[in-house]
Length: 419
Image (cartoon, rainbow, N blue to C red; front, top):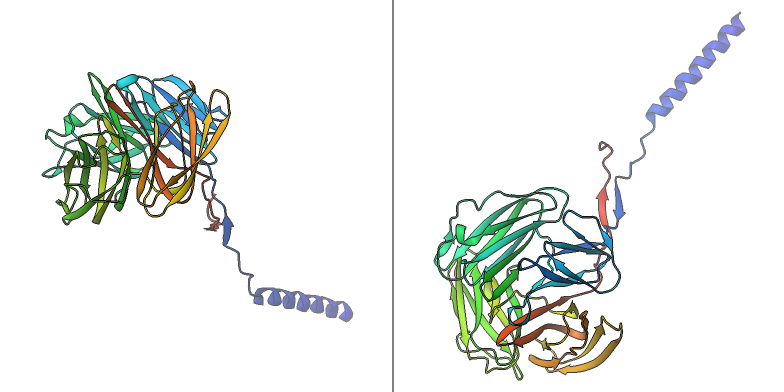
């Protein structure tokens, strides 16, 4: 009996010791961070400037309408008679635009990404619509700030504009604004994001512009040879007066055209700077430098051109023909120009030497009925545009930076409370 008691007591002691040892152990640190790579796919939205348009899409893995299913695509694709927005998605940077009208009434609207904020500049609010497109699966809410020549314009209905998931809203600027002169529309999404464009309809055709960001140094490509009446629109969203300089990049060294020096823009105001014939009829690009961030836009003929980012690789897919204008703002560059004929699938390559601070003009082949894709590769950053003058009307297609989307791994924190 005694022996039995001793065995039980010993067993209890061992158990107690084990429990005490376990509770005394320090818990191992839980790894709460990890490295993840975000998805590299992106999308842009193509919006016609009129009732119907032709979408040129390149670099997209799929296309869809706002309320439709994704359709896989490969290579450059032309989509005719599109009556509403078309979404391009892909693993790289989808590029394209929508051509509306024909001949002298042609208008090009670049496909643009969805953004939480941006700015648009138009010569006047009359006959102009603001189109907000929500290509996401959740609702968006947008606030507008409108600037005119005499300061900010308080407009009823400019706040809390709801745009449903995979939906769009069209807002007549003439209803919000009843003042002459250039108007800037700054938008900010309090929820979600949108793609924003403006389109101005008239009896002779249409013009359009896409959203851009503000900055201290902005580049505007695409003033064609023989252009007259070139106008630069400026908007100052800041609290202090801004002083800007406009420089021209023509066939020779950069210069300041008449009317482009020490341009003063009041706070929360817009200004139209007419350059008249100061560019001497040369194919040119313009640069805007300011002591504080401004918004800029180029108006040449009926074309409204937003700023572009200088890059070493540019690409566009659109209608064949016209003139390719290449500008190298800082350094001389030998630029490789690759032109893919969408009819034959054949690519021709040439090299164009562009002097530092100058613009060169190169005619493009006009034989591809389905359009052509032009890719520019340069050792230093350049800007470019495709221009065309038909029956006195000017068409400008800015060429945007291209290439794969960089997606570096990021730190992510693990939250065990999430379900």
